[in-house]
Length: 391
Picture 1 (cartoon, helix red, strand yellow):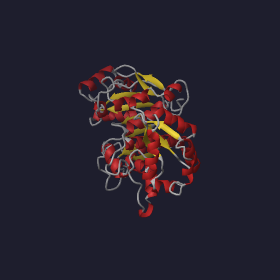
Picture 2 (cartoon, rainbow, N blue to C red):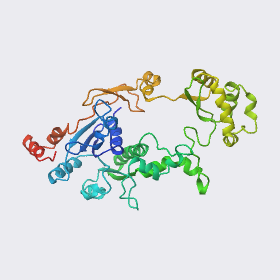
Picture 3 (spheres, one colour):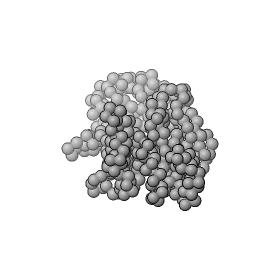
Picture 4 (cartoon, rainbow, N blue to C red):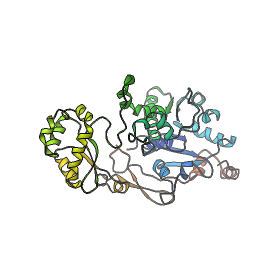
């Protein structure tokens, strides 16, 4: 399933948000030309060396792309970039605030020259506004969006364990580009998309924001448990393994009392009859449930919960996720080539074709000569640009 075959994306991208967005487009068949700094390339290449010497972030977010190294601050490099953009369908960038506009790559200027172009800017906070020029790393945006205020324990804040603000912005950029391509198909005109990490993350904060509507108390930080639904969270079985479980409604609560706790009378106890009651008395109820878990192994507990049925899960390590039986049964792991050899990669969620696009993670500048050759530059001209450090 590659519906974006024939679509060309030129991306001035770095770190996570824009690379993640463009990888989604590449997975669906778009040609993504990733413009990187000459030499080291995207600085995310140096975040770590955990994938056979390559960066874990980079391998994750950059398959199916072509890498062009280019110094567009040099007039010769800028001329190359302008020629690339002239033939592109999408121009995507997440440079430092204002950098693209200062380089003459602002949306207004690009759309005046190329009315069919879709220009997608990803930034921390968007503009205009008092935060427009601020640096915006993922943790900073999680903080500004209020995510940290509801994540962690009562005593300690905790950030999400993944780059959730980067990912949110990347996914909204991806879906917005798809929508803009559909709109262009009807109107023949491109558009400007302005995606901020702050707005993407605040959109995901909808439940706690409305829970705290008009000055109401916000949901408390509850660790791995749900802040407002109970029982919903981790319990330790007698073998020391943690089981996650969740009761979502009164039917499940009655089944849980009878089938797991072996105490059907608790279902109508005035302290526990509704979720609001259970939430108010969560400490006493939690102790009662914990005592029952302590009598069982994790396998026994999961068996009883599944029989009710009540939702449950093991708390897997990352090593166990690599070997997850459901992913294996669905054939979701494939291999992608990298400069360090083939590595496993998860197929794009959604498409069910047997052969998803799972092409290489590029080395820095791997496609520079080929891309420049397509633009009509001779070998001698490319050699001269390389000698001058422009590519």
